[in-house]
Image 1: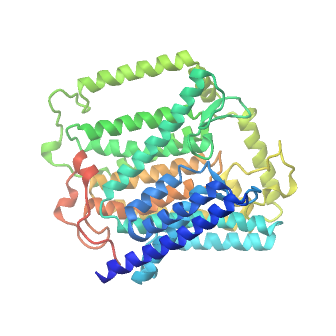
Image 2: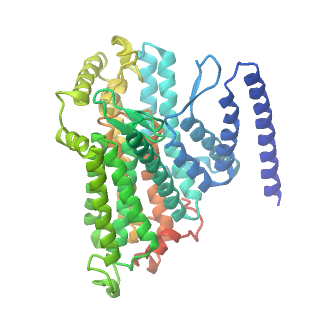
Image 3: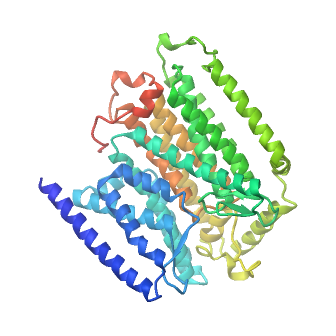
Length: 525
């Protein structure tokens, strides 16, 4: 009762402060000094803070939505000189609530120790601070990029912390899947309206400046990032489908929904025309299949399930109605592509998948050469975050930008920073592999393999479109880091903390996968 009263008191204080801030901003908007849209920021801040403070699942949903809103910046003042990114505002407000929650429980240090790869990540951030302080030509700009990098690292860590608190891990799967489906649909609908009415670029669709192609972006930062996002979601969905197929259970409505989601993400991925996203999705699916193959001996199934083919299904577990429906859908997609001539555009992109002598491939090649030439000025510690434009003039009014994440890290933080980044990724992968060895629950493995494949999508795609300073990369790396905790919840056993119950090795049905709940306290070590 005392705890409840204290929480209500805190909520009242936070609400009062935010109401006062809304009044002040509204007054500024009336006087013409503050943009009207800035009045809504306190509401967003309040939602994020209170979710992080009291509702872990809602906080994770807020982060999932945030990474889908990277296209939007909010100008705080009427002179349009001070902007804030909507995704970063949501992530940092959630982080404040989470930090308050941990501080009042007195468990901050214990929880931080459970975040995978935290030590190499910390050293990577320190090295970036050092390179920026010593070598950056514009410390104000360098500080701005450092803060963006720090916001990404915070998003990474808070996903792991939130995963510890969530008692219904299946709700995490549903939330991520639902938000991803909505984002994919927004981009496809905008593209369909544009092509049907010949409207040119409308909100949600952009014209690629080098090729003139229409590319959907939905609410993502731009078209390539949209492709990365739906590609990562496709890989996660394929991992779930692979689990449902290998568990050899009777098909249900939930599995049909997942199949539909996979089809939606695949169509959105192709429509994005992002070759980096295509390669990333292919690499991610290969990684998922390889991990399933490597760990296949640790996934036992009861003899009663082996070779089971329910009435009306083929030996692949597909009903005749679903097979007919899939064939009709495939024919419909082919007809739509032919009528809209989108098949020609897609064919051209596939034909020039590795073309570096013209178009965007040439731009990326020249960009990388220029960045490497600059990097030679300070090869060990780099030139500082966001320092690439020092020796180059703007192109069409746009400041130059490093398009390859590996070269970006090398340029900004040198060989030392690149080595620390590789250490970070290796430590993160080790945590997932260790968890996969210690659990035999198929649903847990689906989460582990799917999030790893999604991270691969982001990293491969980032070789063509740099996402180091975007929240979406850190979000999917954070999901990968949180996967061992979520896998523990699915398996209903503490990974690596003693023998698991006898039921852990039993496969789950598709209903179990989507309805699984946690019956034990969160992991504590």
